[in-house]
Image 1 (spheres, rainbow, N blue to C red):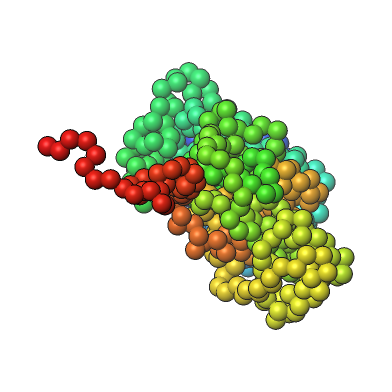
Image 2: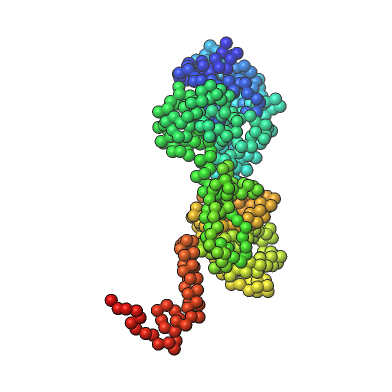
Length: 566
């Protein structure tokens, strides 16, 4: 009976091997999918539900049915993988199996290490019955009928884009070590919107999710239709399950026998909002919102002139301000907006600068940003890069851009070549249109410096971007070389992006204007009007016989006692 039904086997293991209460409704549902799902499947369940224990029991059950089965256990590191394999061995060696599966216990001469062991009834083979491996270890050469990938993605190995690329490539080896007709089962929790797990559906994997609370109706789209059918049926039968229950992050508990409402409230207090959404609701939206602070919605976008700009702009985020014909390279919900109101006159820019981040022959490009300042706003009028780091063609092109935008000063970063780049550029600049060249040096961790320079400027909606500059940026073939992509995906983690050249040069420009940003736009407009009115009065009264107010015109004698005295 136990050998013929995994659900009954799980019940026996829970009660008689682990001395636990009967499996919960959600645990049974996970077990049902584990045994009946497709050959390529991914199980996401809230933290603490016991998905690893269920899968370990599944491995023992499969070996009991077929002792010649080969199983590979892969985790983020060898220690975690060996713990899972060790748990499998504990079930096999448990006294509760003395009269049921004694043939699975290793015989003398067979492999018995926790990292690599055989079951007693297995035929001699170069591959062990169960092998535990690290995802960063040597997978090549192993062969398995069943590959279990348990939490291979953890914060330590997925913080940056380069790390995630390497991790995703390593997981592709599962297909090589899994025998034809074999199974690959992923267990895990995505660490962010950029998780390697996002690509699994494209590789033919089916995803099924069991959150700790029924998702709010407004959050259902975040799960891309992968919520477990049992939970979907629950919500269809009773819509009130999706109403906030003891939390604003989710509805009623999906598995109250495991974690009731009070328990989840306490865990939410411990984990805080982002942690709870990530670990229990399996919703990464808030986590990404906090991790990636630079949002395109904080920009103001409009068609800019190279000579003049509006003296007063009002940021807005309503439907009428959304720019719908420009691709969103940020995260879900991020948008580009036009100003809600353009006020005041169009005035010449007060100052302009061109910042340059030189590169050698590495992977980044020599990038530039032309910014101009007016009435407390920074206007981005040009933004791009060149593959050739410091060749004559690149230097000539930069000099031409400087001339076209009539910049006052050119600021190259001197970290590269100890100021050499500025000297090389000076010859080309002087040939076309002379401009001052003032090198600068960058200090500190680059990612933190970029966020520190850009976030305050953007949060105050003081960075205004030319619409054509953004369109040109989005024409860049490689997504990772797009400035908007780099801007929205920057985080305060060393090596956060594979390429960060364009967002780096934009941050240099933002830092350049920091001393001027205290000039409030409204005050600047008021000062300008007062100055204009004073100038008008001066000119008007200068042409009158009486001159300016309260002063007799030159050559005219003033008279006292005008009118009656009282």
